[in-house]
Amino acid sequence: MKETYDVIIIGGGPAGLNAAMILGRSRRKVLLFDSGEPRNRWSRSMNGFLSSDGVNPGDFIRKGREELKKYNIQIIDHPVGTATYSKGTYVVESSEGHVYHSRKLLLATGLKDKLPEVEGIEELYGQSVHHCPYCDGWESRDKAIAVYGKDRNGIGQALAMKNWSDDVTLYTDGTRKLNNKDIELLDLNGVKVCTDAIARVEGSDGMLEHIVLRNGQSRPQGALFFSGETRQQSDIGEQLGCEFTGKGVIKTRRLQQANIPGLYVAGDAARDMQLVIVAAAEGAKAGVAINMELQQEDRVKP
Image 1 (cartoon, rainbow, N blue to C red):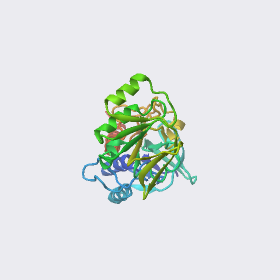
Image 2: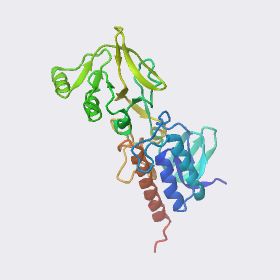
Image 3: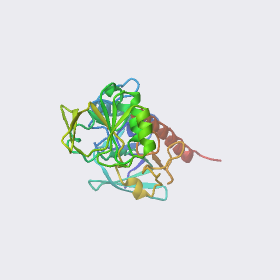
Image 4: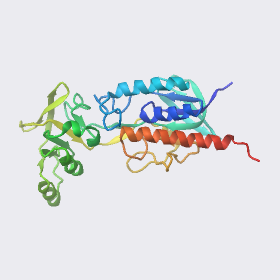
């Protein structure tokens, strides 16, 4: 006989864990899948989260999972291979081939960042190379900040980084698509521009020290921010037929509902602001909405 859960949650980051807590406290039968590959796993600290500012992301997840134990949340530490929906039931198959059923499904699978194709950047990512100034700008304050963006893609971020440092340089890595208005705007706001191609970045203990250009010049830099592409961590949303925005995130309504009945999406995979505290809040919001929907379905009507 198949076992059916009230809710299956795919994704064990802040959004998934907070949703699981709300649903567990609502006495729902919950199964949570965690692939163990959160977006911020390279970072030393998780910032901008009240009461947890500066906490190690791994420690934050471990504490969250510990808090779920009293609510009898079942956790499976494997990714999900497939998910289908038919006649009010979700069928989820784990990477191990086991099949599970649920009435509702929450995707909290997050995004992946595409790093600039620059030698040495992977070793520095999450420590002195970042994509989010609200997450890591404070730690980079008053340093010589580099912003990486080919063509015209780095203009906005370069201007924004002036909030954290007076010493900001935009690197276009060999592309020369900035027009006269772009250059004037950057110059008026004190942003330097380097259009030469980059050979590599250098640093030690995870901290950026120099950007080395292909012409041999070595430029001292203390941090690097980039506006790179992101993609879904999981293809489950695509499998289920979710609607996506032009930025590649899943469209959701006010309470995190997707376009498929009983499907909710929270965290970076959805369309809202990509901050850990926002992801957690979206998870809580989705948890409440899911429980209310289950209540309505189960209520005896005259």
